[in-house]
Amino acid sequence: MDDIYDLIDDYFNKLIALPQFKRLQELKEIIKKKYSLLIVGFKTNEANYEEAKRYKNYMADFDALRNKLVESKRKLYEKEEVKEYFSLEHEIQEIINKDMDLLKETISKDYLKPRKCMLSRKNA
Image 1: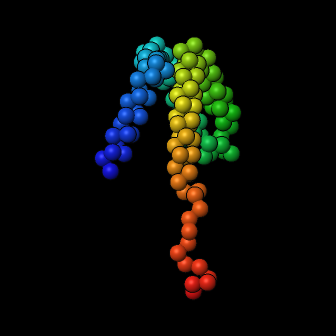
Image 2: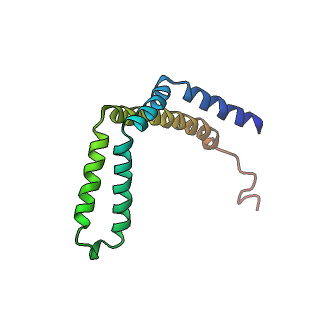
Image 3: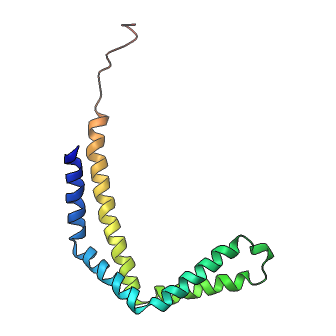
């Protein structure tokens, strides 16, 4: 069983060695430092909106809360570093998806082989 954990470790080590992953980590720090006020504003508006959703039928300013959330998200997500971050995140996810598809295909080949049944109606 240790072999499988070694393979998993090897896979993740290769993944984090990718230039895309390294840049993603850099961007995470840049975004955290450069846009901390926008992040706090977005998270605050998101929390307020989520809380208000439970009572939206009774709140006169529900649409205003939603609009504040949308606007704060737009301001944050329009930043070049944030766009690049999500683009790289998508690239890495595609790499993982392809690897998982290859793994499933490799494993499935073993399970799709016809197996001879030891019991049949003739033997019963």
